Length: 169
Image (cartoon, rainbow, N blue to C red):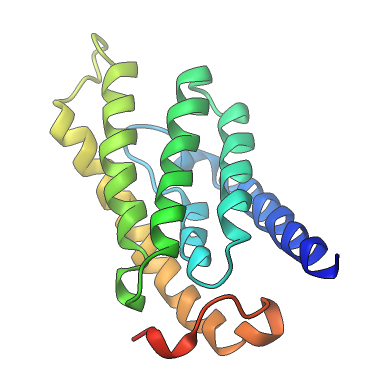
C-alpha cells in the first residue's frame, strides 16, 4: 500500500511541477518557436516509473490551459507520454533526453504545421519540426540532462529504487 501511495504521490508532484512550469513560462511554452521548460522533466522516467503518468497528466493539464485546443490536448499529450515511456527504456544516461527531442520535433512540428496551415506565419513542415526540435534540445539537454545528473546523486532519498543503477553508463 505504501509503495502505491508513494508512486502516485510522485506522479502527482511531477504533474503539478510540469503544469506550473509550463504556465509560468507560458510565453515560450507554446507556439511555432518554443522552449517548453517543463520538458526538462522528461528525463525523470529514467529515475522513476511514476514520472510517466505524472508527465502525461501534467502535459494534459498544460495543454487544456494552452491556446491550441483539442488537437494539442490529444497530440501534445500523446507526444509527451510516448517520449516519457521511451526515455524510461534508455540504458545510457546521455540518451535519456533524446526521445523527447525526436518525438516532439516530429509530432508537435507536424501538429503546428497543421494548425498554422494557410496562415501568414506558415513555414514548411521541416522548418516547424526543426524549430520544435531545437527548443526541445534546449529544454531536454540544456536543462533536463543536468537535472538528471543532479537527481541521480540523491535518487535514493527522492525516489524509490526502480532500476538497476549498474546498467546505466
